[in-house]
Amino acid sequence: MSSIIFRSLLRTLCTIPAAGILIGLNSGAALAENPTFAACLAFERPACDEVLRVEPGNLTALFMRGLAAELEGDDAAALVDFDATANREPRHFGAQLWRQVAAATLNESRAADLRTYLAAARQLPPWPRILAELYLGRADGAAVLQLAEAQPPAARAEAVCAAEYHIGRRAYLAGDAAGARAHFRNALATGATHVFEYQAAERAMTRAE
Image (cartoon, rainbow, N blue to C red; front, side):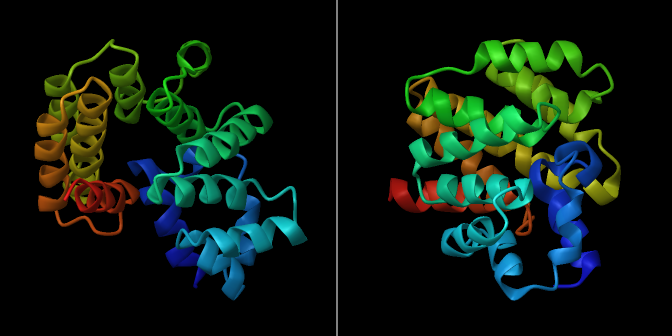
């Protein structure tokens, strides 16, 4: 995997630049040519396990393993990795967001941690901050979609895909399965196949069938 592809993949995780999503994790870029690390970046859990066996301090692999577990519906394992990532790098937006998603799915909560993170992250731009605010009940779906659609053309499909997925996930957590499926379908309709939320929506629709 080339470093260009690596940076593109990190950029699409939660739809903001790697420096914003995975702050403190870019040391893994030099490993992008490693086939095992590349497989980890493609959400293969065993590959992430292997990377972490060799390099226990690799936060990118730790976060990616959490995302891989999330795709498999293993929220308990995902939460362990998201918590560990956020505890080691509190500025990591992706870990802070996804730990709340995974925790809520398990009838737990990391809302206090997310509020603390947002209070400190004054430089975090409105997008994707609003995704965290959605899960905290500070923003509704209409506001999230409006902000996603206002993103620059080159990033709009990615943003809308993420917005639709998270609105759907929030609906699912509230017990609205039909509404969740509608938003997951909208996420897939963006065609942003390289975005993590696209893959998550695809898996969610498959499990619902």
